[in-house]
Image (tube, rainbow, N blue to C red):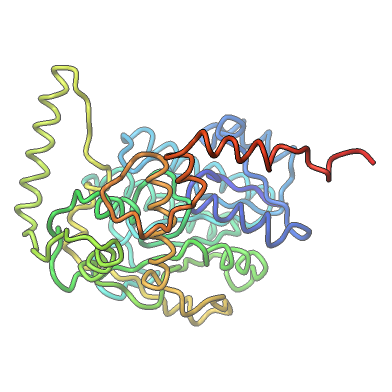
Length: 372
C-alpha cells in the first residue's frame, strides 16, 4: 500500500487512476486530501503514516506557481522535507516529482544540470530546486531511499485547472492569441501524463536501479513551439494565431502594460489577473530541452513509444473542447469538430419532446437491482 500526496492534480490524478485500475489487487494507493494530511504540518504526517504504515510515498503536490514566497516555501520545500524525514524514518521509498523549472535554458540538459540557488529565482523554481538539493543531501547523510523525477511541459487529459500546456491550448481555442509570442526554432521537451504512471510503477518495483537517482521523464524528441501552436490551430480550423512572430521586447511591454491596467482597474472594484504562466514568458523565447538518454538507457520500457504530443493532439482537442464547451468557457470554434451527441441537441432544441421520449422508454426500474 502506498500514499499519494497531491492526488487532485493532473499528474496525481493520473497516478491515482492508474493504480486503481491497473494494480487493484497488487497495490492499494491512498490519496488523502490536504484537510486530512497537510504536508506543512509534521504532526499530520507522523500521525497519518504511523496509522497507515505505507510501503511507499509519492509526492506530486505543489503550491500554485504564482504563490507568494511563504506558501511556495512551505509546500514545495518544507512539505517535501517533512515527507522525506518521515519516509527515511520508516525506511520506505519516496518518489518526488520535480520540474524542468530547476534547470537553465539550453539544449540536451542532463540530470546533473541545475540552476544555481539565487534570490532572483521565482518562488516556484527556487523552492523546487531547494527540495532537490535537500533530498540528495538526505540520501547521502541518512540513507533516504528516494527517486526524483523531473517533468517538462506536461500534456494529458483531466487537467481541471487549465494551466501549463493546456493554458496555451485554451488560448488558441478561445482565439485570444492573435499572433505568435515566440521565435522560430524555439524547442521544448514534453512529458506524457498517461505514460508517467507506468514509469513510477517500474521505479517502485526496481529500487536498486533507481534509488538515489534523478530522471528526466520526457518524450525522446523535443518540439518546436511555433510548429505545435500552428498544428493546434490547424486541428481547430482557426485562422489565428497568424504566423507573425512578436519580439520578446514587445511581448514584455504588452505584459507590463496589462499589469498596470489591471492594477488601475482594481481601484474601482474590477479585479482580474494575468495567467500565472506568464512568469515564464521568457521561456517562450528560449530553448530548453531535457535529455532523455538516461531514461532510455534504464530498464524501463515505454508502453507506447510512438505516442507523442502530436499523435495525442486529436484526442486532446476533442476532450478539452467538449469540457470547455460544457463549462461555457469557449464557444468560438467550429462545433462540427466535436460531433455533438443527438440527445444533447434534443435537450437544447426540443426539451419537451425529449422528456416525452424518456418517459416512454427510459423510466422503468433497473431490473438488476430488483430483489428476485
